[in-house]
Amino acid sequence: MSEITPVISATGLYTPPETISNEELVASFNAYVELFNQRHAAEIASGAVEPLQPSSAEFIEKASGIKSRHVMSKASTLDPETMGPRWPERPDDEISVMAEIGVKAARAALESIGRDPEDVDAVLCAASNMQRPYPAMAIEIQQALGIEGFAFDMNVACSSATFGIQTAADFIRSGNARSVLVVSPEICTGHNNMKNRDSHFIFGDVATAVLVEARDMAPARHWEIVGTRLKTVFSNNIRNNFGFLNCATPETIGTPDKLFVQEGRKVFKEVVPMVASMIVDHANDLGIDPASLRRLWLHQANSGMNRLIAQRVLGHEANEDESPTVLDTYGNTSSAGSIIAFHLHNADLAAGDTALICSFGAGYSAGTVFIRKAA
Image (cartoon, rainbow, N blue to C red; front, side, top):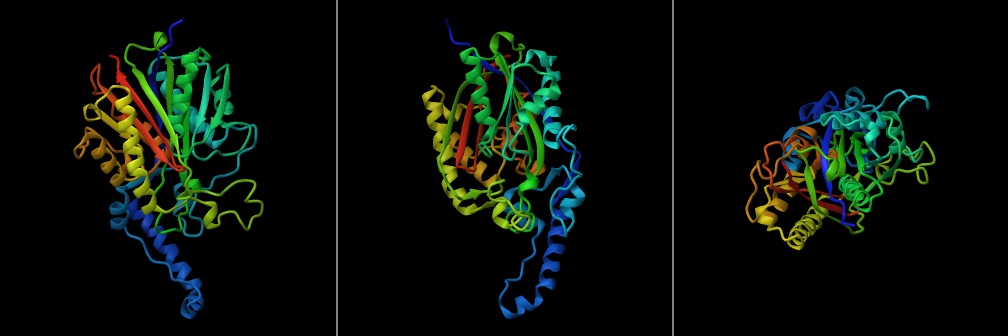
């Protein structure tokens, strides 16, 4: 029995309608800084507390390449007294916020090729931050879509989507499923520390979906999955300690170590060579010349990291056509970033073109998905 070839049949994207520009974010952050310094004036004067420093739009763009981001809850995120997304808690018989946006992205993927939910065998919810431990978000998305079969959650931080694609492809190859939805609803603003000058600007909110199927049922225009590879190396340089085992009291919720924290310079120094080498080695193992790759859809975390990784892979500084970015308008959307870039920037490639979807992030974790345009 010959091995079944998995392909990417379709992708879907849900973009929240509200946006926050760097200028709006800086105004909010600087108002918080002023309030903090006023409220702690005596401690600052005595030297017991360090005064907070203001941010600027120029600093944000230089540090990250981000100019704006889409968010699920703009007003509360910009409120200097709140500085985070807030919405009314929903009853258990109403769809959760995370599942709701995941369903919208999934439906967009299915509708783009006229696929019915009953044609899908499984749903993987692959994202950085689950709204709850259980029931699985994937099962809620599955139920809302009306899909039979099975569903489960997986979390590998910013690499969740590529890990999900390999898992789905393995299900296809083994014959355990013929059509699998990999859904990545990322409400990243909920775990970002908006009161930290070094990270208050990083994240945005979004949801993506990737439909992985057996080639014999895919539409004529699809992407063959040539090869996938995953890698993890433990590091504390990107961490989030929020969880029911270590956030048991109201006093601990929202404290700095229970939100996104990172050692940015260490991450840059360690992740860039690791990911670049992983891409080149994987390409060589597949018989692909890295320099011949038509396009790189890289994780949208930092423009400097992407520029250097692409240069090491291609052998020259990549232009926007070779390595497109969505970071400037979406911000860092964790596992969804490379999928957004693929979704928005793949239509112009020709049959036979070989390209790469790549993620990297906390863990450390990294995933490479080499794909080839079929038609």
